[in-house]
Image (tube, rainbow, N blue to C red; front, side):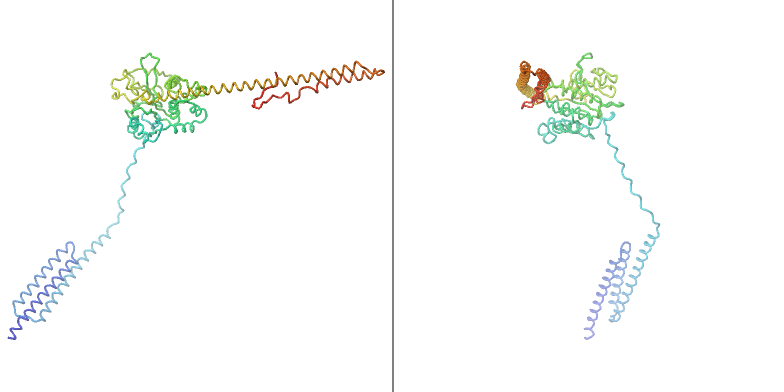
Length: 502
């Protein structure tokens, strides 16, 4: 009974030992396999753990099938298995170390090569051109004028003109597009054209006249393209001048071209282009300034229309005059079939270029392939410059009339003062002359009286006294001449000087 009772205990202990050994071996091997294996070694460690688990299981099964073993035999088996695991793990560590050392030595044994050079930087963009294509120095600048340079306010005032303004910006990338307001234009003239030109600009009574003169001055100083704000740019400015042109320094377009023999050929001034300092602009500005400074306010106010003093008439005359000096004739451009013609350094565009609305020039209008600019002629509409021109001209005439009245009144007042002063001066001269004459008469009378009543026995003495009287007479007359103060010009309180001589 005791043996029978002890057998299950021994068997239970053996089973427990089997499970403990299996769990310890499996867990230890599994932990080491997961802790050290990596890459290709991971599969090797997994296989080893599987074989170890299988061997342990087989040993346990054999022990259970044979006769019961003692606790000492079970301990020896555990120690043997542990030794085998430690040996295998040591071999695995040595293999990994040798593999790593080989890779490291081979890495350091490799020859050192310099790093590849960095890729070259991208080529710089080509420089932007500074002048209009096919021209000789006309800057890529577009000038326009309005009563404000604030684009937001400008758009709020007139969206239509704002849209036309943007056609110049959008169709001419790379250009500097400037909107000058009236105050900036006046400051520009004072800064760059002090003296005669600035005084003439200030004397102009009409805004449209100042705008005319400003466009000539801004191109004379800075060059570029000028365009009225009611013009629409149809083609890029770089496409205006024909390819192959040489030495082009000035661009203009015809406005009127009725017949080949017509004297009414006229160059428009709503669009133009020039290099800085072109002789056409130099002569034109001098002519306009001279006319302004030599005219009275009334004459400036009575100019028949704006085209006469600062507009297309002097503009056309200046171009024609310059071309004549270089042996060219503006009338060569007077032909509807001419798209453009180069005369010296001036390219004159046919009427279609800047005036495609002209029915005799083009039936296609804006769609004409030769059309470059379209002028909207808003000046002739309600609220345009002609309406402002008429109002300002009437105001200028009224101001000139008032100024003339004031001048006449001042002249009449000055004449009255002159007459009074002259009368006073004459009276003083007469009084002085009368006093001188009276004194001379008294001296002469006294001398005659002494001569007529001589003392007795003193004939010789009387003769001596007579001689003395005769010698004194001229002295007395000389002493009674008008004083130097009387001979000086008379200066009344008004400050006007008059001569005392008659």
